[in-house]
Length: 343
Figure 1 (cartoon, rainbow, N blue to C red):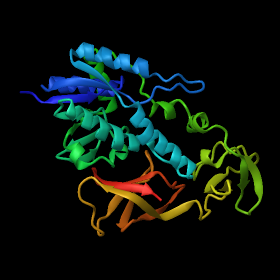
Figure 2 (cartoon, rainbow, N blue to C red):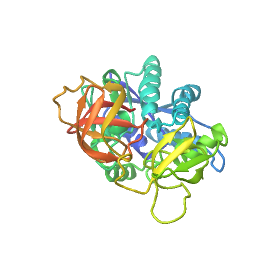
Figure 3 (spheres, one colour):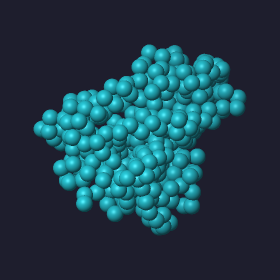
């Protein structure tokens, strides 16, 4: 008897093709739309109903079963509240990482297995082999950075068939199969941090924040910000400070609501070659101290050589604008080892 696979279908081309490929491979496929967020925001209507209908249309095309899982309360508690709390603490979290850890590869997995599934599948650009996670073949679309907190046990129950393909190949095959979503534009991240900026989202959830001073490298107050919560280390846009050279944020003092900036790109406060990691997570076994690793300190950031000493990541060369709350993901060539949250 063929194995039952529940495919997380978001209404986009990647998950649509994932369902189509698995059906071709002989699995008994059920499509599942996860209803995670439905709230409209100022100037933005959340497209969840449109996405749901697109996913349902593809399921009808493929003649597979289709379900809706309502995870909105859990998503709010596990992803959105976490994200807001992190920003309030002055950090810069990555909600996509928490969504994969807590929702897609925990809540969805548990619910699907209880519902009769043998496996789950997603449209991620990454590869799973024997409970190990590898980068996607398309380096331009690789999403392994967002998956480093998923457990090996969850990966053993997971499939990511398009991780072996490039985005142009996915589009071309979806067109060849005449999938309803073949030409649909990619969504920009999570509904509320895609087309809606993080500042607008936080304003909608928390309301206006107290203004405070912006202080330059000489200790002079050179402007006012509209809430330290909205800014991140290394940021150079959106400060509204007139004149000459661009300013970069070097530090935030949340307690006193102050932001520190510099115009000097060589300012030592902008650069670091040692990063403290918290909440370390290893997909399989942790690397040994002697391991020479590659680290990525932000999505689409460069890979840098590094060594792990206990909870400190020592970089071969200093990096600029490393923000606490972001993740450092560690690789051994194309194998994803795990990582931690930057302290």
